[in-house]
Amino acid sequence: MQCDICNGSGCKPGTNKTTCVTCNGQGQVRQTRNMGFASFVTAAPCPTCRGQGSIIEIPCGECKGQGRKKGTKKVTFEIPPGIDSGDYTVQEEGNEVPDGVNGDLIVRVRVQPHSLFNRDGKDIFYDHDVSMIDAALGCEIVVPTLKGTEKIKVDSGSQPNTIVKLKGKGVSHINSRGTGDQYVRIVVTVPKKLNKHQKNLLDEFQKISD
Ligand SMILES: [Zn+2]
Ligand SMILES: [Zn+2]
Image (cartoon, rainbow, N blue to C red; front, side):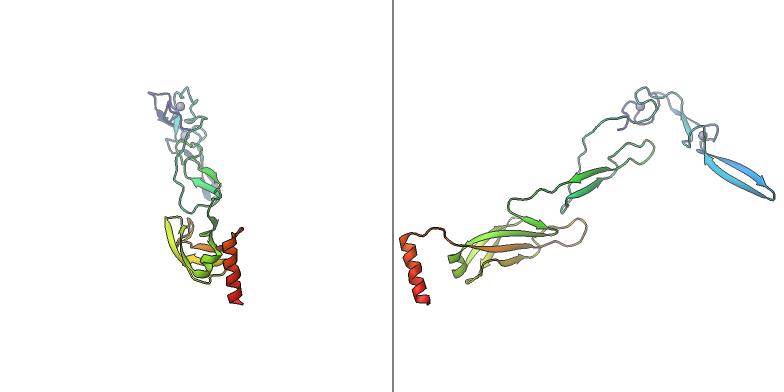
């Protein structure tokens, strides 16, 4: 974290950094070496100011001139749509680097499973129960999507596990263009119990179907 006493300067409040006299504030020193006919100029970090170009006259008592201190802070950031489980970088919210660019905060994101939807990349999978009578006769169902609900017409004679595709009702992905689709699987259910009347009607149905 940035030191809040000196606001990251490392100087005791009320004092300033002074220009390094060794390097004239350049942060580096040049050395010229003559070797025969040629002369080489080399630049090295200034040993006096360690390449900073300035010197802290009186260090801040809180951070001992570091300009930063240990601590934690709360960081708010937006979860982008279509994020997957994995590492997510929040730029410049990591370690404080006085006079430089701060480190990044790496957030390990775990996307939790949903009670209704299964996700595979950009696509969403959803199961919807339809009774065998509705599947045989056809019906209209209303299914949830990520954004509201959608009406689907189930054709008469629909077979178990028929897949209906809802185009563009999936996830818009963070690293690629376009939006995924939602796939609705028609799960045909069979009544577990029949009363006498229902049983008779189905017996009758079977007789006329043979
Ligand atoms: Zn300080
Ligand atoms: Zn210097």
